[in-house]
Length: 200
Image 1 (cartoon, rainbow, N blue to C red):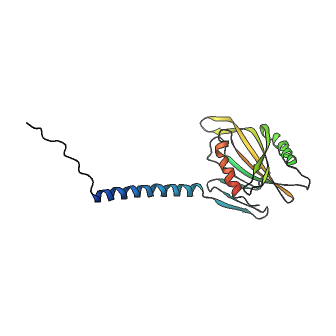
Image 2 (image 1 turned 180 degrees about the vertical axis):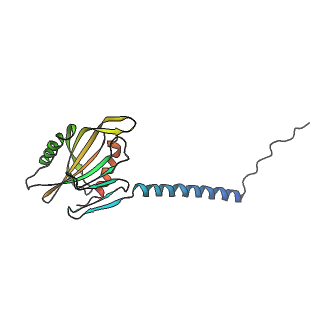
């Protein structure tokens, strides 16, 4: 006696089902591409900053905090959402003479900071390539600050910094990038984007 067939044969998909499957796939692919486009738009969104007196224009992320006219800078922007230490980009101006060299500016900055920043240590001077292809000088350094955490209390944080120096007419423009040592390399992309949108 033959047993009944419990599993009927599966029919191959007809033309309608094939078109429906293709349409679902194409809609899903379009949704993924659109989501990536929106993500890039949000990540690449910027606000334009202009300081007519200093002759400086710059682009910065809209969720960063802007501060102007500090005691040692024209303006600075900070990512206050960054853990441990707010990632910071800062622009300062210094009057210079015709015979000024990068070493003079870096020495003056080192002298000033060694008196106000804990465990301030200067790294190596290095070359830095600007977006327009011009090579300039940069100086790295580290110092220690205190991070205030409501759950963990105060704890020391090592901060890494990089000063990029540009001579323009009778002044020196110093673009400073700072981040916690743990995030310095990963957040360095912000300096590159900032330099691309900086006009002076």
